[in-house]
Image (cartoon, rainbow, N blue to C red; front, side):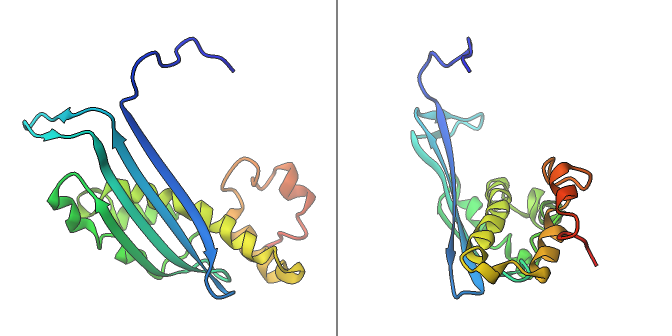
Length: 185
């Protein structure tokens, strides 16, 4: 695909979000997310502040997630770089998600618990990018073992994925083809 509005000027800003999952102990995974904002010129704000070019945000979230029930057992946040000292006050804003299950409605719950003035929009954005990746990590962990997909796992998958997107819609061809496997009881 070619566009006629491709950038012709200098790069101003880059946001990088990277998420990876690692096996922790065979039953749990560690999901690690990084958000980094880089500015390529000095920035002058309406308050008169000047921020030099370079890293504006560099944040890390680590989640310990149980692969059998998608429960977040622990969370760790690191604010390696933030634009203002007051931003560091949000380091514990996501503590309330410990014990939550990653499932439909998770993002709305997190926004209610840690959104707006209670938290940091950048941490919420990173966490929101991490939770679908947790599914991929758990699927990768379970798919290493031929017996990793049993009836209980199929119920979990259908509970958390059914109607979350076009491909997983209840009346779609994929779910209809495998409806006996994904039957909720």
